[in-house]
Amino acid sequence: MGVSDNVASGEGAPLTQDVKARLDTTIVKGMRVIETLAQSAKPLGVTELARMLGLHKSNTHRILNTLTELGYVQKEQETSLYHLSLKAWEIGCKVINRNRLTRAARPLLRQLNEETTEVVFLAVLNGIDILYLDAIDAIYPLQSGIKTGWRVPAVFPASGRALLAHQPNPEQLLARTVRTVPQAASLDVRMLLEEFEKIRRCGFAITIGGWTTGRNSIAAPITSGGRPPLAAVGVGGPTDRLGPERLSALSKSVLNAATRIAETFGSDESVHWF
Image (cartoon, helix red, strand yellow):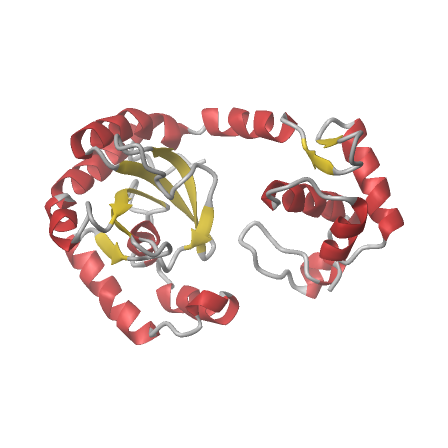
């Protein structure tokens, strides 16, 4: 399937024909090349990129040449393979450094990290996914399993469930997730909705396993101005350190961090999250 037939939005969902008709297809193709290179663990060649995106090699080559001239892509002279330059990272840093929520949360994330000694994170809801805006690793020399910039289906981790539970249309979001995310096809929507009711009552969510086997997490939504929460703060770690009992014991700390971040960020409804 070509890019023009299945252009993904920022939420990873196919766009309607009406929306696609209003898009500049050249820009769309260029952005898809950038996204594909960003997601690839290795540099890619013209043939492989063209196959992955459903484009002609000549079209792919022209796009790569343009992106190279603009400084977004670099070509390895020895292999003729392409990878992203640091320009995308530079732009991303400027965006995240201007983000009021991230700035408000960072000191409190540090405090929560020192208090729990586990990885702590700040995540936002984006469609049916969560996007990690910030993360601080555990004190222990182990991989956290969470990195800034990662995107995962919201229905699996605690942060995603904490946010989905407070949305005005959780049934629609779950239905879309089950329909479009292969790993979610077998989820019991009725049981999830019951769990969402519990999350709304207690103020936090806990997941065992979640998106990554062997890793558990707890998270609480960050509310501001009476709107549905778009962000959550949480703690995660391996099962042997963060079993159900310890997760429950951390609930007070996580809830306190969420409340303090909201207070620091402000409650003015006219202020946007981003």
